[in-house]
Image (cartoon, rainbow, N blue to C red; front, side, top):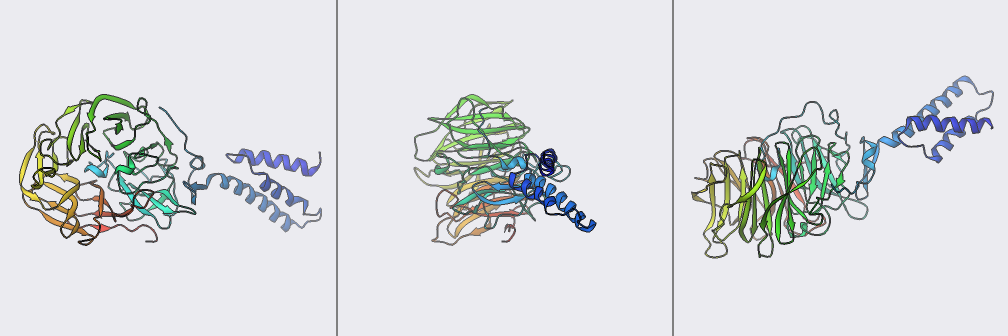
Length: 472
């Protein structure tokens, strides 16, 4: 065996031990050729340069295995993330404590930095990133699902903040298309995700209609299939009190599946709700502590279910007899609010607020009308404080009440009269002062076209401002 061959074998062995994967042939050959170019009379300083080059090449092999990951969908690489993120997510068959779509309760802030707790270190925010869905696990720690331009099409992307939305980094995302505009009809069929929820720094889900999960802070994602409903689209998902629940449209019924947040041990409830006969069914899931509520709307309120002592049971949803749709939010296990479009499909009487102080057993109507033509989202950071997003005569708007619905004021106007209405999604509060919402232009459908802007409030909903990501 020649000296070069022995050197080549020894180099491969050393680099194999240092790297997660064997060094590529081209790199080993390039490094192995370095000594052959040095004569027996190479000066000591030159020899040290060769030794330094060998060490640097060995480091390069190791770094090449752990630093670069390909952005799902063929986008630019993210630097600084674990090598495991580079492998495609695998098919498996097996929010929020704070999930902003339904007025989440604040979860405890994690100790230490996300990277220290096992989350991916991340890299730059992709150029051209646009928001689709937002979730916060604490006032500091949040994530946004969105899209960014790629070589041939838009790519699914996720960005993370650990300082309450002041700065952001890019982290790995599921290898699947993103559907913009919320969980509309196009998000109930086909393939892709349209919403994101995290229960805590480690456990998160991207869904609608597919279901993907991460249990390492987003370093890796795995596509899931819920036993007993593998082909049913997931149309809503929230996590609270150590459990995650998903709502599925399974042919003619709405079903609920639940799992502990740290595992993928999904179990279907035996309680089902009718989908209804209208053209565009939609389901809303609200969790607060260990309590939960499901409302199915198909033009009007069709039915509901309630989480009691860990089991979903039949429940008469609010506004089931008003001949119109409703949206629901909870600020605690006992305090609920519902905005109902009374008589929309019979004798229109406008948007009314209904309030429950007993966990949804009874609801009472407040006197003042909600000053919107139609309600799309509702949130309540605390008793007496309510915010509703929807369409108004002056454009799309968020209106707020600070006295339990007796009086209202407009806190945000977006768009102009006569232009397509903005779409509001993920309106909710992580604390009594910090809230979020996504607003999109209302034009385009699917495949990342219906994407838009992240809005935040830091004064309890009185003022809202656009969140700028890196480079925006």
